[in-house]
Image 1 (cartoon, rainbow, N blue to C red):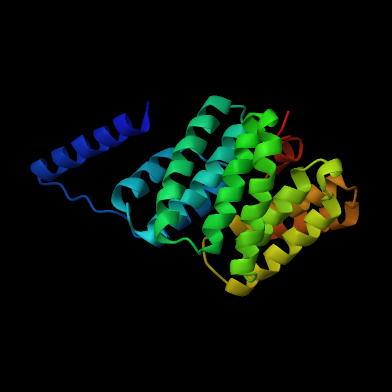
Image 2: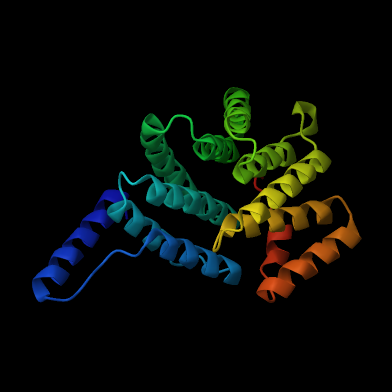
Length: 247
């Protein structure tokens, strides 16, 4: 179902609820953030599309709400790749990019938004590798601009790590440098001490994958143990370790 049709159904539902006297109120942004976080830990992203639609309906024009929505869409697109749902990934990239363009018109100097632009362009490359020569420089420009704007923003170093990790070596890819960037991102996330930030857990998982693929077994085992000591068994990580974004 297309985005406009889904939103229309939600609006009809709200009209019905209002006319029937039932109460219906939007959740606070932090509540959505925790919903995304808790379900991510469990490896269950079934409800993410509906929550994202809710946020886009209730928080259109609200910077904090739209940022949480866009960051959730970033994770949802990755999930679609991991579950081989490329059609859904393509549709989500398109709608997320349109939303990002609009919010960047009002907030052109936000490092997190520039990081997301780099990420969404990287997803476009994953969907169509032939676009790499055109989009590759744009990805790097977005990431470097994000770092220039705020080098203490962990999302900048997360995306810098992704770029280094997924790029072929001939074009400057370097898994060990990517791991360093992920580690820097994690330290900055820990310094922020935010509750319910699934992106922090994502960085930890990228580090685990990095250690695994570069055969740093001791660091891999220790980092995975530390993660599961905090959140419990996360067996879905085993599937993630076998995932290749670009086939």
